[in-house]
Length: 335
Image (cartoon, rainbow, N blue to C red; front, side):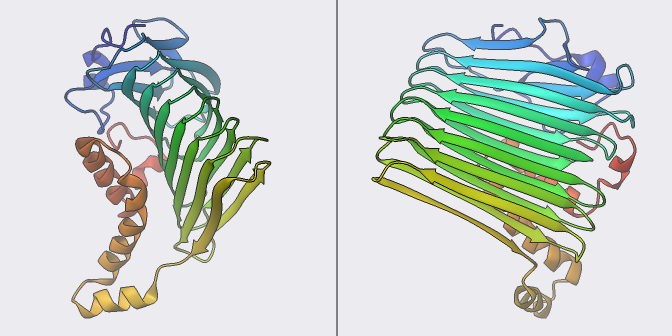
C-alpha cells in the first residue's frame, strides 16, 4: 500500500469513536475487527528505496460488538533502503465484550532505513490483547519504538528483534499502567548477530491495587559480534501492598569486546520527597501524582513528536488521576 493514500474515515470516528491521540497532520487507517477499512487484508505498508513519509501514518485498531471472542490479524511494514517514516499503532475496544486479540506485527528495515513506531494500547477490563512484534534491521538501519500500555484487562507484548547488519541501532521503551485485576506483560528477545551494533531498552511500570506485571528481557550477543553496545533496564513503582512486579533481565554473551548492562528495580513512592512537597503546600494526592509523572516521563520523553508527546502526557496524567474508571465497562471517548 502507498502510505500517501490513507485518508481519515469520518463516519466511524464521528458516530462511534474518537481517538485523542489523533494529530491534524496524520493520515489514518482503521482496522475494525481485524479488517482494513477500504483496503487490503492483511495490512501491508511498503516504502520504496529513498522514500520519506511526509506525514505520520496512524493505524487505529478497533474491536466492537460486531465480532466478539478470539481474533487474529497481521500487519507488515517494510522500509526500503534509506527510507524513513513514523507509524502510530493504537488499539481500542468500544463495547464491553470479552475480546481476545492477537496482533502480529512484522517490521523490516533495509539498509540505512529509519523508522519510528509509537504503540498505544487502551482497552477495557474484559479484553485481552497479545501483540507479537517480529523486527529485523539491516546494515545502518535505525528503529525507535515506544509502547504505552494505558489500560486493559490483560496485555502481552512479545518483541523479537534481530540486528542483522553492522551499525544497526534499536531503541525500545515502554510504560505500562495497571490497577484492579489488570495484568501487563512485556517480553523482549533482542539478538546482536553481527559486530558494531547498538541497542537500548527501558521499560517502566506503575501498578496499583492487585495489578501484576511481568517483564522478561533477553539480550543475545552472538559469537564474533564484537563492539556490541547493549543496555537494558526495567523499573517498577508499586502503589499498594497487593500489587506485584516480576522482572527477569538476562544477558547471554559470546563475544569479549562488548559493553552490556542490565538492571531491574521494584520500589515505592519516596516518602521523603512526598514530605518535602507537603511542606511546600502541595496536597498529598498531588504530591503522589507528581512523583508518578516524574517516574513515567523518562519513557514519555522518548516520543520525538512534541505534539504527540503532549497528548500522551495528558492521557497518562488522566489515567493516574483515575479518569479511566469507566473503562471497566465500555467507553467510546476515553482514549
